Length: 68
Image (spheres, rainbow, N blue to C red):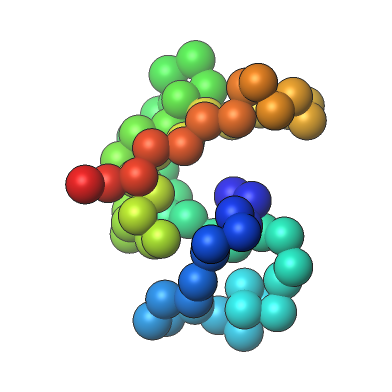
């Protein structure tokens, strides 16, 4: 995922995540993708529990859903 301006490290982040200027890791999918939506990412990292896969760089398609 892209690091937002207010991104901050959390316990367990690897050194390469901390050193990255642009991206951080989320969990991996616990199930198959449904039209490029991945739900139930495990472990939940940085409050991201699902995402949408995109092969392009279209900001209108950016999708993330933080856990509550």
